[in-house]
Image (cartoon, rainbow, N blue to C red; front, side):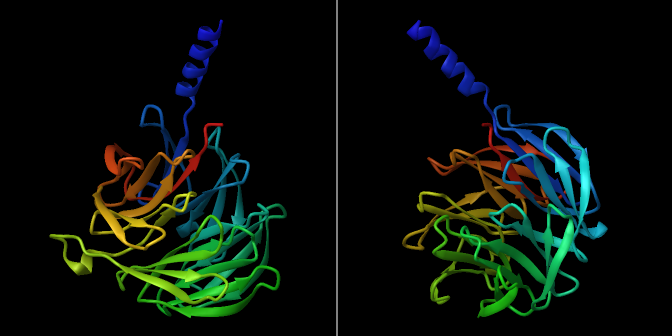
Length: 319
């Protein structure tokens, strides 16, 4: 009996699979990947130029920035049906969901604003004026602050989520893109695409702790353009997508030293960890594929072909 139960447990665990959603910017589609088979199992048509995507707290819906439709779409993660559209402001590119699951903070690149949307009432709560060409968006784990990056102004704008007002601005290197809070919320990591750096900031003092630069043998410096960032929950690694350098940098999240560079597809853009954090998935825009990295041995295991110009990525846990 014990052996039988053990076998059933093993078989059940093998059948469980994360679901990976990928937005294809040029195809106006979402690719759905099964993490067991590492194959695209479904492709859904969505709005025009889908870029940023994120899952609701209960994983029942996928929010999609349909940039050229000036809207955020809510897609049923089981059926792929577009349930409704949310107001978003013009040209939504990236967004972040507040931990309360209600407030969605959206970067509007063309208007220089951040639009805050009530996802339950489907109404705009307010709009916050920020710098020129806002791009990255993140909300702290405790929900107290939202941070937006402005590509042309080169600032990180700290927004108090209660007052919806900017309380601080941090100057960073040229063309800041992605923002990522540490799991404990004590640090903020922000990439600067043209500056070629990632800055780590103490969230209490709002002072820089470290600035990380990258150097890949055989790759021209101007091709090393940091964009997406993902951090492991144990505080061990930070993974940084380096754009047209076609590599992901593995950074020691405690010492801020670069440990390794991993060759992936062309124009690596965004990153997402599996639920158990054993795999890292990357979207590679120009080569139109997703790379799978084994987090334990820091090796690229497989490449999965998706649509044209994959941009955003989100993982729905198996459980």
